[in-house]
Length: 163
Image (cartoon, rainbow, N blue to C red; front, side, top):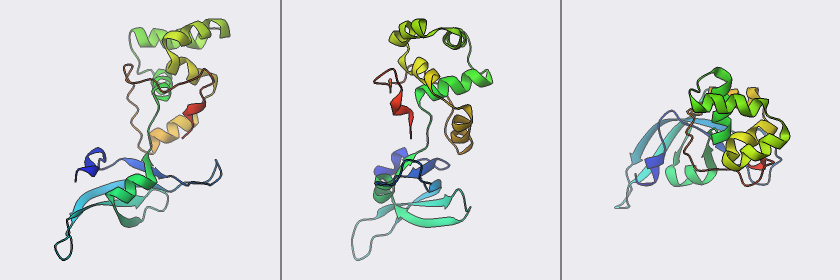
C-alpha cells in the first residue's frame, strides 16, 4: 500500500469537481479503513479505501487508493488559518501570541512591513472568516499551527487561501 501511506484513518477529504462553479457543494468523505483487495487471476493486490459520506452518514463505495487520490483532497488548514484559529481560541504562546496581537493591532503600513517576515500569518488577516475556519476544524482538519511549515502565500492579497 505504497500510495496509501499518506492517507490516515479519520482524515476527511473533499471531492475535486473540475469545471464546476466555485461555490458548488463538494462531497466530503471520512476515511474509515484502508485494506488490500486480492488481485484476481494472478494480478497484483490493490489498496482500497473505505469511506463514509459526512453529510448522509452512509458508507460510500470502496475506492482504489489511486482513484481516491486523483479525485479527492484532504481538508486541512493553511498555515495562516491555523495561526488565526489558534490565536482566536488562545492556544498560541510566547512569541507567536505576541505576534498575533501585534498583527491584529497593526495598521496597513505596518502590516506590509510584517508581511515581509511573516507572509502567511499577515495575509490571512486581510480576508478571513472564523466560522469558515471552525467549520474545517469541525470536519476533521488538524488545527495544529506549525510556524516552520513552508509558506503558501505568493502575494499579499492571499488569493491562495481558497480550498
